[in-house]
Image (cartoon, rainbow, N blue to C red):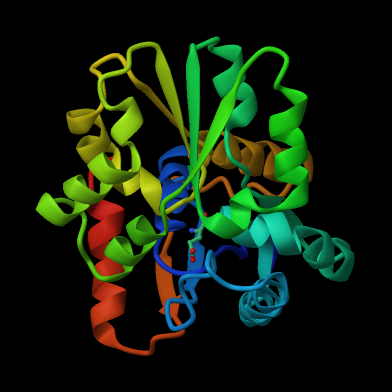
Length: 259
Ligand code: DGL
């Protein structure tokens, strides 16, 4: 098979990376995509560094065996801890794209308050802490762990009272604050954009890394002459470590959700 006709692999600890996949499909509908979610082991955000690295490398291996031309690590937690190892193992074989919380664009907006919602593991990662420190002189970035939002998505709960009460609880000090930017630093969180908009001040800006990551993927494919370029829509395959039909139909459900 011609390399440019190969699929693009997507990996997340579970279902969250579908928020990134959705943007990639909008940008490049003719590509074929294989998404692997490790829902059997999610959430990664409450695990040790060692577990996150091992689980990520195992999952990436499953995708690499599918003969893909590129892989998107559509998980902030896995990118934070394992991207260096993934690059050193596979960068001579395929394109590797990671996702990071959209801190720089948030700082650029010059809001009075920036909240960074992410998993606890992402928030504890050294490089991220340094980044937050680096911007201290112009913006205070307030880290807030939101592990339950990951559990909600994995359980198929996308909105409703439990979700809203949890959001109100973790963001209680910021509910009516104007001039607020919220960075969604976990790929599970964009599915709660409408609940967040309902709860936060009407001017609050929500930022996530899915657009930037998808654009980077497209740019890299073009740069390496790996863009498929067909007039027909590509194929989307979902794989999950929870080997049941229910989780696969949940994947398609999330892909259809308006975010
Ligand atoms: N979706 C992942 C992220 O972007 C992590 C969720 C988890 O497994 O805790 O960080």
